[in-house]
Length: 315
Image 1 (tube, rainbow, N blue to C red):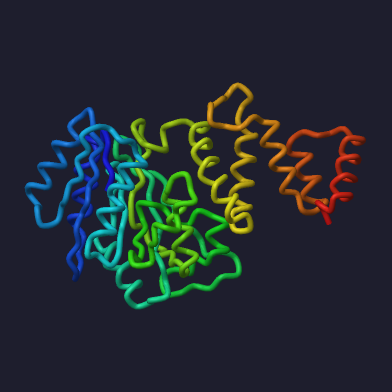
Image 2: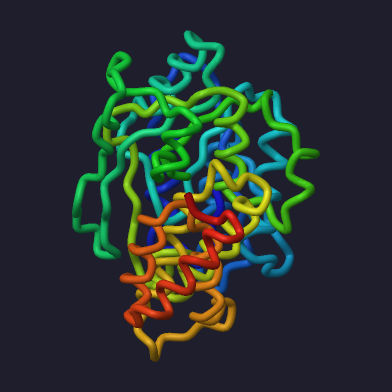
């Protein structure tokens, strides 16, 4: 668990972990990132009450969400645990049998890497919102109370969320992540899916809290896309086949931003358009993209298409 300025939420997050009903022992590592509110004192109080379960990682200065998460990862991977589950300090688990269900599946299916599931959105006042449980992907079959997340399915849609996942620790090799500028959850999930399929449980396992202090939900659409663009640019660079769909979707979302919206980490619109055109494979792709980006000049479209054919870019 990572926590920073979560004084209004972290107690519920911790309680949701402590309420898990399991036939195995577990430990909760909390990385507290030098909060300016009472988050640290709340974490310390819980650690005093549950010293056999809670272990704190207390930073002496604010190190930021990525470094804090990596510190918690290291603690988990250096522990004796066989499996790792994740929950941020402003989210919480709903199902008291979440861990047991996920660990039972991983124990019974040694070729699977992770188990994810559905969640519920909650606002900062605690009001419950939309339930988000993915439907069975087209052409796939049910497996028990869920379905398999193959590498192909993972590449098409976000079936794995940080606050719902439990994964197999022994399959992680941090040497594999050195080529990336930073290790994010998406890199970790993709690495695991390459090792073995995931499983999506059709249960609501956790609550995702949308509030003004959230790391991701409150920073604005432009800043969100900036983070996604940075992460998926790396993944697309090394794994273009697996991440083309998601990367293209992010680029299109950037173009959909209003003209007056700007974030310093976002590429210019012309650069985004060039990236999208470089990904064109068929004439149909080309015409759809022309329509989307607003290219209407018939002569320009015809000339561009001839050039793409000349260089073998479209078929």
